[in-house]
Length: 357
Ligand code: G6P
Image (tube, rainbow, N blue to C red):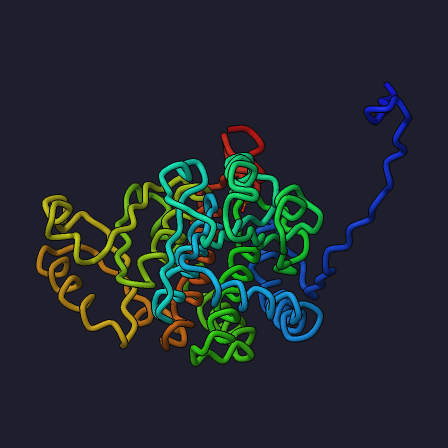
């Protein structure tokens, strides 16, 4: 079937073709699944992104910085893993003194906005329907729409007034890994430009170490965790957002019921469920004094406890730890799903890009 397109005057419009290139990333190793290949690729895709932010995309970043300074409020709209990276973004902006928050795209009607509200649309595909609907409704009603996408010229890129690319290359596994990491690095970079002390250049090495130092241990651990049904993941402040992302990975790929919660919320209900049969993963970097009490609470009830970084080696400085802990979660999820013989790259009932409301 051939489709022709006409303008209002009845003249045929000949569509122009545009070839889109995503960065090509090669890792010299054979992989059984796309997801583990993509987890490995993070060492390279993170470098490509940082180079691009420093050079090719620096003038777009300058414009975004100026928009941030001239707005009254900054809201991030996203779904799934992109929502979790957005939570990190708004956390960093609040730390820097800006009024900022993140909202799930399907709930964007809950947000208040005006002509001084700057909106970021965060999406690896740029095609998530909930985010597109929000973008269409907000177009020209807010200060500006900035998209942060992996796919150039995607719908969100085209709707937005300004667009940043996260340069993660093609991601085939339904679950986000390297696109999540590059979104977080983009937000770290933005925070750095706004005055936060973050050395993004050391991140590719940190990612690589997180993989190298933990993979064998995680492979072995996964053998003991293949019958795991439920796990609680606790974190506080920025690390709570990482807990959400780790929980999502465990649910979508390893089919494990994983519940992320703020450590401080344990005593308000969930502690009733904690006993010697419970599993808890705690995000416990040295800079978080408050989580230590929560860890004692679950220990006292005999729960089986894993801690990052105590049981897994990662750099535990702020804010890098929030990213590296998710790399541990990605590996753990992959190896448990592999032990369970699951369709890791294409989990049941899920799609890479959700183009329906
Ligand atoms: C789907 C994918 C998730 C992704 C979410 C948002 O549910 O399975 O991995 O995080 O969509 O996608 P986006 O392309 O907007 O980041």
